[in-house]
Length: 345
Image (cartoon, rainbow, N blue to C red; front, side, top):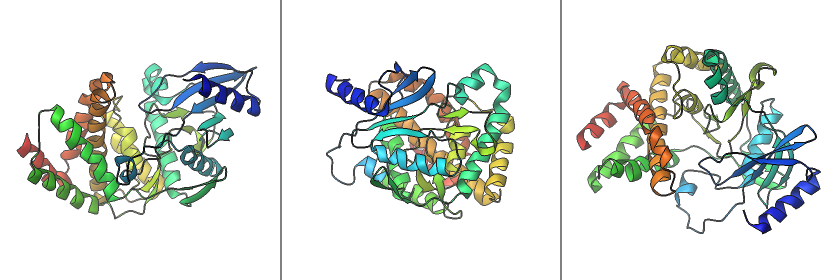
């Protein structure tokens, strides 16, 4: 961090009345954002440092097609305010400088679900059941896609077929070469055609808010709260309006931890009941398609993080994601993609 940025942060904290707080840096993730825990005489908060840097690339860039917020702070604050207004446990915003990319928010504590379950694996069913209730309630909530947050406009966009295609293409662009699989132009066209047909099968359910990165390291266990507020929510700046199965897949098919297979079906059924969706063959096929889409994207992203961004530890997670992807392919809806992948390998 530059001296100029530290001066900017100090001024922001001083204006918010938190300049005397003790500051502790938090470990980074795959993004360019940086976080600190603040403690001011026992009061706690989180500082998010997310300076937006314009990409300088023309429209059609991956971030644009995949509907990423691309570092815009208003994307986080708009969704955050929408969630808290509806009673969900997103962090309450204490202060924000949207232009500077600085945010001071409620500290949801230290009980990220991944850490809670590492200490107490027996709590998995209880916590994940609560998460399904929260996701079901989010799906049933109405969200206006056009929002005004801290004087800036933000639109929650649609998780459409071009966005999903751009994501699965990361598997073709990064993971396949990593596995020494180079597709011909004809095969690339076939890949696209297969996915286009799969995405057409996702139109049977009304879109809802998809947080898009809902997994055990990004949610918090808040058992002292009530009902659907027991799950703390973060990392939703890329939220879109999409298929209701997406965040369910994201939690159950976690890249970083195994979920007990014995509870998976019950969790999906619980979500459907909470969301008031029929747990029928149409939903199960959509679940498999969403799962394959998400896991294909993650395979590509993890190789990209290792090869392009110098983060080789992400390769250690490939095995679990590969297993999830193969499980998705086992569904009858995935027969054509399964056959295609068999041919190219």
